[in-house]
Amino acid sequence: MATPRCPLHTLSALALALALAGCGGPPADVVLYCAVDQSHSEPIVRAFEAATGLRVDFQPDIEATKSIGHRRRIQEEANNPRCDVFWNNEVVQSVLLAEASPALIEPYISPAAADIPDQFKDPSGLWTGFASRARVLIVNTDRYPDPADYPRTTDAFLEPGAGEHSGMARPLTGTTAAHGAVWLNAWGSERTFGHLQALTDNGVRFGPGNAHLMRLVRDGNLDFGWTDTDDAKAAIDQGFPVAQVVPDQGPGEFGLVVIPNTVCLVKGAPHPEAARLLIDFLLSHEVERMLAEGDSGQIPVRAEVSRPAGVLKLDQLTLAPIDWAEVGHTYADNVDALEDWFNQ
Image (cartoon, rainbow, N blue to C red; front, side, top):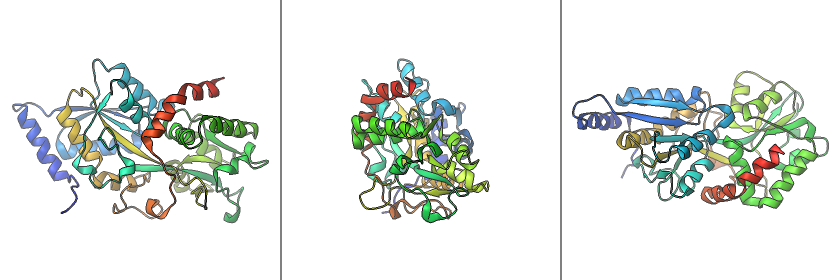
């Protein structure tokens, strides 16, 4: 039996039925809060509108509050929901919405998610992951002309003399917050805060975001640092002297941290039927392919989805073992301490 893929013509037919169910009125609107960069996400939204005839109230986030800003909005609007669908650029904030009391998102198991690997979705359908980015090292090749010398592990930042020439974004928002949450879950709070202190003591520079860190490395102000695959790709595509390194691939090392986008149906969504159509579309093979082929080069979580050369294949790499529900719990228990640590 073929796996459901929710092709565009099926969505169009469903959207037409939805419009007709509204007694011939205009197509139903759907409100989307989106934490993915607008340049990457808006073409997907417009493709959905073109395929279905439904109008999306598309509300992107800003770099400084990625994922956290929309999660807080959904919490604040709990008694009068305005959002239908939350397209998050990572997982942790989605888990926090699922774990709120009462939960602020509700289950929806999309037929388009049938072939998404289990590690990328909540078993009850509260959130579903797709189109991922990975936490990689970006290296300035003028500073490291020989690939044999590239830093390749989490511990490279702790090497004597390396700290003041390296950096990462503060792990408070977006994928960097998810990365910090993975450390907290894997290592516990004492070791994680000890690691952050050791990085600080070694002179590692903590900045406001992944794109900022990428620019510091591409311009030669830092030798290397943590960033996401989409930011590394941007610098490489623009011809800067940088390379992307997939870290922690040796025996006993941490493994590659892979962070999918997630999509959630907001509890009490004003337009639930249109919301489910939008979720089906976002979880389709077509959207994973579009995001892989776009400027962000996002990594399909399904091995069979086609991708350009240079986009990672997850089944060929050692991935960090991550239980995102547990990571979310750990993050919730430590988020205040994490924010206090960086704001002291």
